[in-house]
Length: 187
Length: 309
Length: 131
Image (cartoon, rainbow over the protein chains, first blue to last red):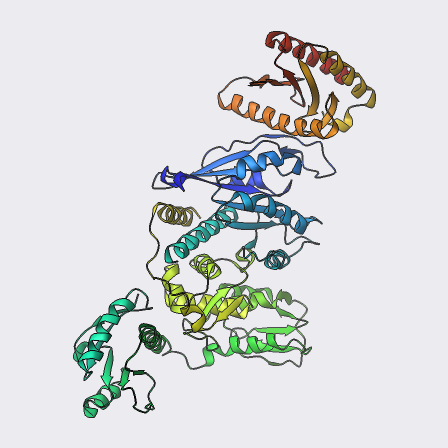
């Protein structure tokens, strides 16, 4: 992990269109986030006005001077080449999902499959939005789906607009990485 | 980590030498930090079964634990802690861990009279009865109630909020003659179960064992349940691998009480898998936390996030 | 400008413009795409290649806009990727950044001529789509 010795590492926010990746990074970044949003013309996929086609970027600087880079990916599978570019070498990945979308479970599988091979630590946190709306699937369905695949990863019901909730996801990712480092040192 | 002093009396020279060299190996693996001392300052006595019976009975009457060392062919005495010489490191470690846990639970169990666990034990029993279609009711605080039926918990919003925040203590359930009032809200039973455990007594839940290792096979939804400090660290450690309760607290950098509450909550919510001590001892781990650029960095990140959150 | 708001007739006219661009020395293929990476018209690229080029082109255009803004410059105009065997040019078509054009050219292309022809094509495309 030479990037850590250099004082930098990155966390990737990914997930389908409209799950709140750009919003989440803006909610916690200490600098004005870089966004590459453009007008969304695929109103069948999602009714929102704009969508990310390049990357989002934000950062958190620690008291020690080390920097955590937060990258957001485009959500649409057409931009998969950006997933590979952004995901490679990330310390961990946060997948944001919309619990009211019909295909949310399948979407989770797709993003987990795309990103876990790129993240050596395998550190994964799922942030599930809109769980209190009618028709939303509960976090248990997502955790069970991961469990059936042998993945024990946290699935938290969150609001990506709330910095407190986004910090919960990032903090959990950090705890998972620390527990892994402890386990490796003990082995 | 708990520091305990141990004194050996009346052992043969061989047994005493073996004990002292093994204690060095045990150091760093045991749930407690062990030091040798004289008998006056010791917490634990390691004593040959035939040495000075008067001194031994005086010791045990003081309430402090004693380990009886017996010889190869001696019959097993009716005592809680016994070692047969020659013994192996793992036998000594296992015994010392049990004693450390015994001492700790004795110091924390003092206020418990069983009533503190009544609600949790009763809820656990109720959740195990999947075929039971009837309604049950329990006190949740002095003047409010929690109903269980339809596989869900029902209570007034203030009651559910009190359970979530830990300001309300759940009592034991009994069969309900009335249904919940119209103003009651439904809530997932496993969420109530989590809160009851997370805000319960600091001691290890009566249905959990200090010598068993526990692992969470599924994370609790902290977004929905609310995350109080230490719970995320505990869940991360407990999902990485199985830990003895005392080891879990040490690893996550929190008090045994925090770890006990976490285990009770995870167990009540059905998120916990237990392993026997033998399964864990196959892979003994050093207890020193990892140090290195990566660990320091991640720990920095965690502290930073705690500050801003 | 959404691709499904571009009239069929306009698309056909756009394709004609791209074919014209295809006659410039070295030009191998060209794809007109929306800002969010959907193909609107293409020349000499099969469907799969055109949609990939559209997606990557839109990311590059968006990154171009981001870096221009970061540097305090005006709106993104164009970027040219040069490699051993040729070039790819991404150029915005209209002022509201709704569409861009990607042109792939081989080694035989003359860069100045290629950029001039691409600019010319973009102006023509902007006129016919906003008609």
